[in-house]
Length: 271
Image (cartoon, rainbow, N blue to C red):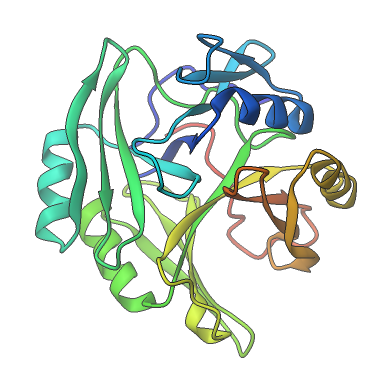
């Protein structure tokens, strides 16, 4: 199993957490689905840490305010959160939660990109981000779903210095992105306008690796989830999209080597 013990390279999706009405109930759902060991305060209001084999894999916390949707949030690694916040504003984004220190663990902020899709950044200190990744039950991919593909590429290119590789056909328009100094793709942007189903508010989708997608769907439904996109074979493997019992969306992905295109879109294990 890949285990990371240092900060992620700037621009790499380095952490995911979900914000829900009832973190404890969400913890029970994901523990049963992904075999996570969920630890935390033990009450509905606390931030819970999900572990696999004792290593951090994701977080589960309360919503910042009542009435907002339940979501999974993608965090991007940065060397300087304050500087990144300035870059977000300069590129046409807006800060939703200004930069602040998370005790000794790191510094972060939450922002919306130029089209309104929320995301977060993480300046690592005591907490590097995900230690477990690219394995069954851990996050393996993050992509933006937007109806303004070109604007999204400009924004994230300006803020994080991404370079893009496009995959374009009648059925889809998709770009993977590579962080500065890297060689592997670390995430993607999907043009939802191609199939006419662009969401009212663009969003980042977290994909979790699952070794048997059909079994994963059946287990998730048994636990109260809803299927939004049935299992299908795509350019990155076999995949499905689900809504958890509290409404947050997530993907299941089995990135079989035979299905992966040139430039395997896997998170790198080292800078």
